Length: 124
Image (cartoon, rainbow, N blue to C red):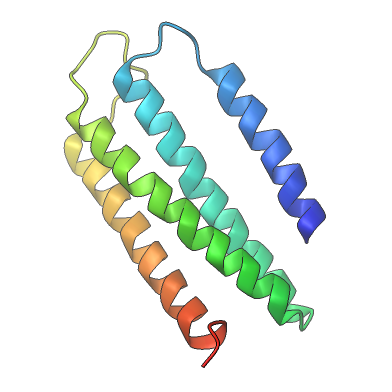
């Protein structure tokens, strides 16, 4: 599982860097980062599921903790995207409602993930 995490980081980080340009707007940067952290959280949930199927509680707990951290990082970035001034250079600007929904869903995923982590992974 650690190899999968390293591979995911190696793929996501350069692609995020390469996808950006100096001309990117505040909105584009915020939404791009928010979506990457959201997807990383989702990937970590999948890793936790695989680790659970393999009866590897340690790796499952590490993946759950990482997922919650990634969702936590995404949430303020969605808020930054909402707050960013409109710019004609924005890439595929979503409505404030769609961004709020994405943020709310990231909060829900974070809270549920943290709840599972707290119940099954934290020492008593």
